[in-house]
Length: 278
Image (cartoon, rainbow, N blue to C red; front, side, top):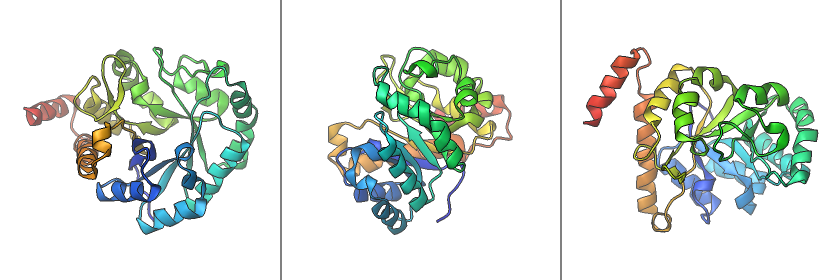
């Protein structure tokens, strides 16, 4: 099963209470390139043989295995089993809460050895919601920029755009994406409102996501982009409505990233987008 650069993934987090087989089926039918598997919400996601079967049956690779914020040895070892079974190369770790010393101690004391023993795996830590850019909610991960995290802990960043303040997203991340791109293992791509309600359909809210995609492509970023969305109950209750929304996301990504001519200069690209939006 061939994987591609810049694959667009559907995070199973987007479809709570759906069976894992149905999640794979919907992702395939709406044009996604692969799956971002959240272990913590599906017991069947812990069965590597079943996950491998779903991946084969739907011809849909697993690119990401996501662990919980209460990470321990059992969970991380199981994540590695799933990676081996599905040829997945990325484990994304939800950062522990600041008071969860048990999970924090496990990560800080063991991550380096796991990294050493599994050199082909991109171990990555989430940037949680915060008013400051790239601040993680555990003491030893309090850094002012993404590169310090990589250098000190030898891990990648799992970058959730919705967790970044809109001004900092535009003035820091988007403008300096060339510096950050080599250290990001996966980007969670979604929009947000001014009052921090995040994981919304791209294109109709606060963030200039089209501009971010344009500059991301020019930075030669070749890792996956994952879609995690908070759907309304009425959307989750209707597969037709749900599929329509997911197809919109696929179309947005194709329009502003996959099909964007990176040989144009910035003024040409901006003018083209302005004309097509009229």
